[in-house]
Length: 510
Image 1 (cartoon, rainbow, N blue to C red):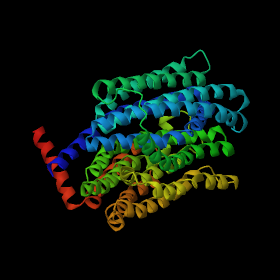
Image 2: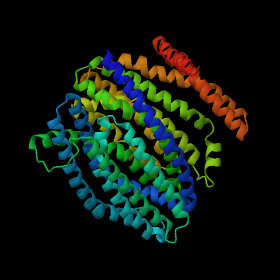
Image 3: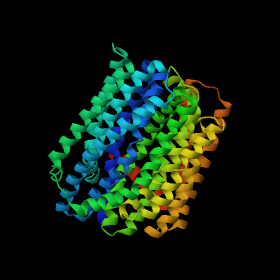
Image 4: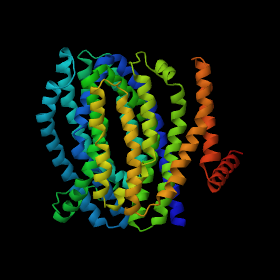
């Protein structure tokens, strides 16, 4: 019990560190997005977004192996076998270097052809788009090789490293925003070059930190046939899930480009900027929580793992709702004061993307638990197969003349289908109680959302846009959400825990 209490404290401490990191990065990201959009213009911003998306589609090959690396390193830490940990790390680096070379070759052979023959990009910007593509490939390869180092930091739960290095990354991106404004060369090309340079600096920072603090993070060429077989076996089945997620997100972006052009890609890009800023808080929480789910499974502590799954799913959703509801009721006004240029469709894209993020948030602990077991074949076939339906369904609907936002609506509907499939599959894999999950998580978050949203949305329909009304609506949305989470979303024990913590803080202040 005391060990679990220490683990919970570590999760809370790491979450707090990651939140401080996220707050700083969010402010910088929102500001730089505005500067970059204004400096590049809607069309060039859309081109960078969609061309980078084409490169990201090649992460279908890397995503599955990246998940395998993270799982194997975290699992081995849970068992305490240091020799195996060293083998896994060195094998992971070898795999990622080989994979980076393979993806560069595929991107040059297939990606360049697709960009020039199929993409909807104005002829006058095609040269710039090709330069963006080349630097995006290089940036992607650099980030790919960083995966084993990042996985080691997460597995060791050294979240302070992310906080410090992220400050360096944010400062770099802030510098980029100012440099492209005064750039004497093509701004879009210059932006791609600088983003690649920042990725390279961050890569060396992570590598230096890991080598200094973790003894297993010294690379030696190792060819362990049995280990590679297990890792590739895991990655092979996980490839279905990784590829389906990439095709859902970046494939949808490309389909929008084919039917609607780069201006709509810019609107979608803005929506995902907002989503990344808000969802980053949940991502940080899950980054702190995931190692404990995997380690508790490796240690055979199934009860603690189930507790983390239920509480993690609810807390992820609550954090996202608390941040998203003020944006949902003020989307038009927020985009108006944030951006000088608000692309068409951006408002509805932002709202739908946030709804999708909330839909996905309650599945994240389930995915981590599934990866921890290593028994993923049937799971990936079923859930990955469902996610793969996003691309063809979106393509058909856009071809029929539907509005661009239909792509995100399809994604939300299929997300709910995937949640149902996850629950049914995990019942057999880890003994998850579907009834308990529905009661403790699904029905709970639906009730909280419905009750918390009523008053803010009623007020929105009655109030005119303006700064004072914006502040008032945000405060009302936060208060309504907080009160509803406390009285409807939390159990009696959780409410008592919150009160005890508040009393502790108040007494310290006194």
